[in-house]
Image 1 (tube, rainbow, N blue to C red):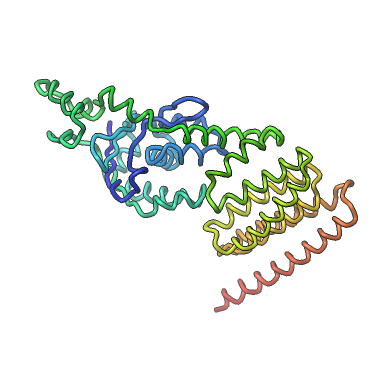
Image 2 (cartoon, rainbow, N blue to C red; image 1 turned 180 degrees about the horizontal axis):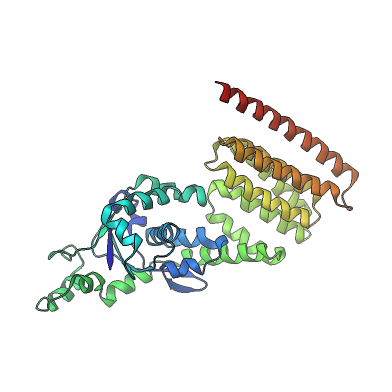
Length: 357
């Protein structure tokens, strides 16, 4: 059964173009729920971003209706997406009643909290999900080669299911090659750099991460720079590493009040701090944990902020407990712990006063 999504005219032009595939693991992969089931969590944001509106829709369906299998994303006219649902079930029932429209729009709005503020664009685009019923003039606005294809079949009786899934070879080719060389290079760099860094292969990850800096958004540039600084250290380029780290920490200090999702952002930084700790870069890791705690404290949700800060302080204590930690570093840990404990105490008092009001 086919579903039609309308309302894409409110999206930027580059996002309103539908793709049936996404370039992933050095090949074009069909956008479907099966793709997201096989994609590691760490790469989900990249795949959804690269796949545009098709991937975004597919991913929120996958999250909201995990039992549903969808595929075959295509576009027969502007401001429209059509995709195929393998079998009827809860999702189809919710589409009929309008519940799916509400649920999936909410899920689209939540993408920025799951990934990053790039996905805020979907908050301005209320979409409508309906069962697809092709009209007699469905292809009027299609390019000439598509109209000719329809005219050749005009004498045949076509059921709604066949009409919905009928796309010419030319159209399919145009949607599967909607990537330029820069897109491909950026995607491969992002994937390779992230994968190598996650495996602790910092020397190998460095050139990929440095290339990724050219296309990284401002908010997550600091996260990437922290990784680059650790990779430079692994390459025995301490001066460059220290300079990069110092500049990044200054940037984080200025940026902490204008971040969209403090909890997600701070957690990314805390995890990188753990990488520094494992590499015995103790003083640097403590400073990064403290920066993460500061960003956690900016969250409007007190319980999440305090939990995140507590995790950062636990990480600092682990540094001090390591036998290789110097006395100077232990003094730094005590200083940072006191600063964050004072901040926690202040936040808790403010929270109690707010409840009293």
